Length: 234
Image 1 (cartoon, rainbow, N blue to C red):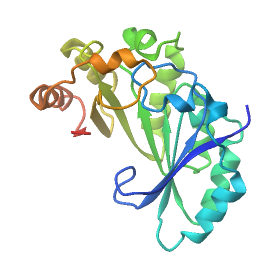
Image 2: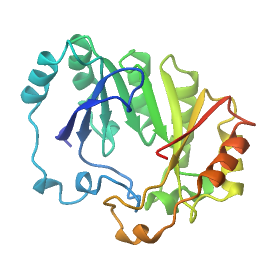
Image 3: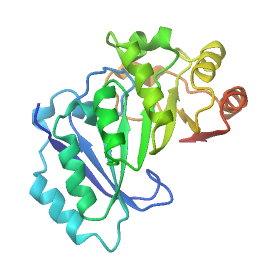
Image 4: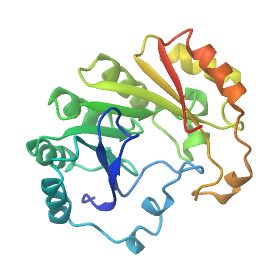
């Protein structure tokens, strides 16, 4: 699969604080989470215009004075064998790099971490391991997911683990299991589910998000395992 840039958010103050960054969207993903907010990157990809690399790097060259970092997201960026070279080109321009990933390709992650190519990794934790297949919509290699978690926790790059919580998938018992699994990790983010966005499965628009009170309860539980726990997207 050749690397395809399918979107570019030219400025973001929230994706990699405290840095001002741009967000580059790569197409393709090996998961099929029904509540995914970027379905155009997964299906009917051919209908989404491709941004050529020369155009993207020309943009980065011009924005050096205003941008500190590049956030690479998807889709799933780690599906691309060309990802390390793509990041090297970004780093040569002096930018920090944040990578969003589902953790399904630990070999790629290990290479990126060991090479010092990523400054920050945000790995999505779909849920407790026994619920992964249902949430991701595919059969998931859980050993690969666990290995990615270990690599990130033991690596030199800064990081966060994060879970978008939905009532149908994430009960209190699941939050406890996630906390037990990720005990001792640096940072965890509870992301509020939004039902007002485009999604891969429109049926999720009927899902009623958790209340702030319920999210705070989850934060209280996770704080027993992880020092830094925050709630996002409220």
